[in-house]
Length: 372
Image 1 (cartoon, one colour):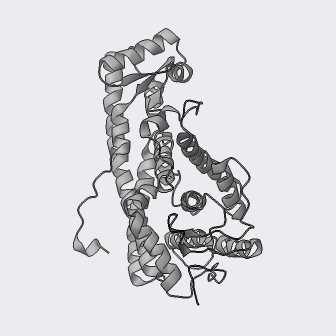
Image 2 (cartoon, rainbow, N blue to C red):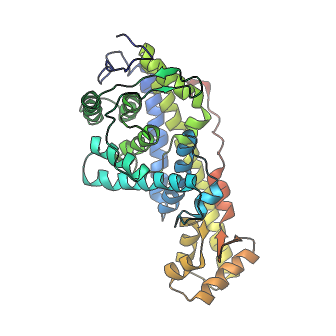
């Protein structure tokens, strides 16, 4: 196979790779990643309301995935406008929120039909809020924007791209005895190498990762997100993608992805434990400082929407505005929440929950035998 960074890679090999890729090291890493993923998924099942995680972690994934593409928004602004992206939200915040909408749209789609080329097109179209077909015109390349030097030129021509995508979709649903996490890692490289759209390939590919895990029944809810791991290892991520293209270096790439799954699942499991502990604390504070008593809907509001409005409490708890306002004011006075002005509204922030979400939990110390 010959490859030239300046020429369309129309000879991109079809899947599965001809080189050995399920090596002994890969299989051992896959076992560890599967165990971490299963522990996280089991902990999610034990949560009374998994939407606490789904709503918040999907926003942080949208933020991180968009940041990789230099679309930057603050956590404060993102959660502030999560329920309604008004004109006051920045363009980057609106675009980041579209990422989350595309993820949720993808979840609905795969419950109705298997993941396919159309799933990818729909996800990319939802990110951009316009119809995104595969590339038809030549000229797309990945390179240095200043020097305009190509680092990689993806396949060119609609028929070629559709052929590569059909093979990609077939591989995802392969009946071969392959670990689904390895399939995800290989498929992610292939999708990024095909680079089927004029824009949004990276974000679409990262959403497809999550959808694959849910489709493979390794996750019940979309809460395993690799974008923060990719940001922390961005140079390595791009180096390894290119190494597969140039050298068929599949093992190193797959180990990188599996390590990301294991680390992210382990950190998310730690977050779940800390969130449940905080829920117990805030439940006690609600009983002590408000008249809400056993109204469990109040605590659900505060965790499903870390930036809550009075109207959220009114609607969810079925109480009057004075009652909802009194509850929230009491929690602010007790230090359980903080409040800020947002136009003519007040936002009540579950600040301790936000701290848990935005802090990277340290990984537990492991013995040398478990390291790559």
